[in-house]
Each structure stands twice: as structure tokens, then as C-alpha cells.
Image (cartoon, rainbow, N blue to C red; front, top):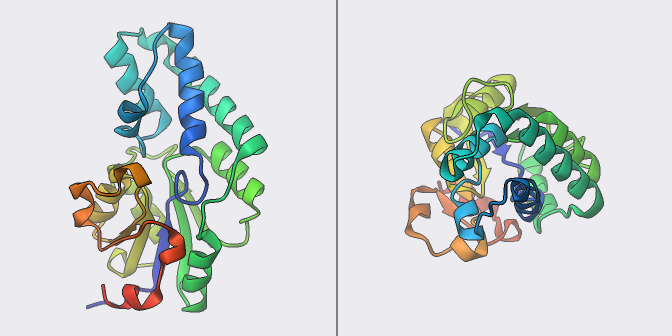
Length: 219
């Protein structure tokens, strides 16, 4: 078995507590069309890129797709503004990064978010020097649950996917990691923690604070 030497972190909901901010932004924007998404329904689409997220909900609510581009810009502007004003780092992020760094892992970031959002997060949380490579699915042919963004990140890190471990919080991200033939640590939202679907992950944690390198070695 090939030795793990690379870790690829997801961002939204894992590095930064941004899912509530994305939800707020989506609600505010979709209110312009007199529609609303419940939080449970919203959670089924976490991990998707904004265009695919909007295409899904536009279909659900019967909104004309001619509004897609303008709505995407509106949501992204709202999200960046919310990150700048009230974005908070998730617990255990620095602990997890230090564990991998201290054990000689190459460290990358792979997100469904566009670079405008990634840049805002990295700046807000002062994490610029923590990641050797940052990949966005923004311009890729496919977003999560397709593995392309993870595979691109591994390629830029000069790592074999078989030596990579992904750290994720969403089910779409977990599927993407597994499709990339990578190991996966999942940190589900507390309200989803007991769901059976996480059993395909290699490690499930309630917080990154609980990450232990001995567990990684036993994957």
C-alpha cells in the first residue's frame, strides 16, 4: 500500500463556518423571486458549485434560467461581504494543519467556491502560507461530486491520488474524494453526524480538534 503523503482540505464548512453565510446569501437572493429554501433542503446541495446550486433550485421553483448569471454574481458578492464581516474559522483547523505539516505532508486546498470567495477566506483567516496549492472548481468542466477538483489539486502538488487524504464536511465532497480514489476524513455538521451515509469515509470526526495522527496511520 502506498504511504499517504498529501492532504487536501475542503474549505466551506470545514475551514470556515461559511455554510450559514451561503444559506443567508441564497435566501436573500432567492427572496427576489419570492421563493425560500428550508435549511434541510439547502443541506442537500452543499458542496455544489454556485451555478449548479442555482440551476437545481431554479428548476425546483420554475425560475427562468435567463436570470442565472446575474443571480450567481449577486450571491457571490453577498457571500464575500458576509465572510469579510463575520467569517469565523472552524474549531481545530490550525490543529489539523499543524498535524499534517509536522508529519511532512504536502498540503493543498480544493474548493467548489470561485477564487473570489477562496481569496476572501484565506485573507480573513490569515491562512495564505498554509497551503502549497489552492484549486477551485470554478473553471473546471465538472464540480463536486465529480472528483476533478481533487485530482487537479493532487496533480499540482505532484502527488499520486493514492497517496492523498481529503478532509471534507459535505456528502458531495466525500463522494468526490472517493471517486478520486483518495482516503477521506469527514467532519459532518452536528445535525447530520449520525447519518449512515458517512460510513464510506475512512475517518469520521465531530471536530477537527479530535484529529489524531495515529488514526491517520491506521487507515
